[in-house]
Amino acid sequence: MWRCLCMSMLFKYSPSAHNVVAVNAAGYKSCSAPRGAKVYKSGSDRVTLARGTNYFICSFPGHCQAGMKIAVTAA
Image (cartoon, rainbow, N blue to C red):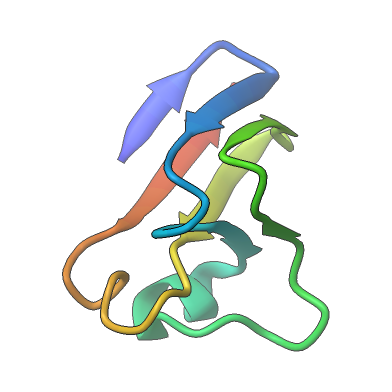
């Protein structure tokens, strides 16, 4: 888990191969995005963090299960 004193985070990735999905703790653990989850897909996304733990996964098949997910705690 990452801890930061920041209020936003920049995700850089190849949009043809990955995305970033904001999920809750259950979605993070199960590698599944709940209905209505925010999906970022530009390849250069600045995401505003909420105070507390923020969870993100890649929803491309098999990616999250292989470890492509991150939990960030914003103070």
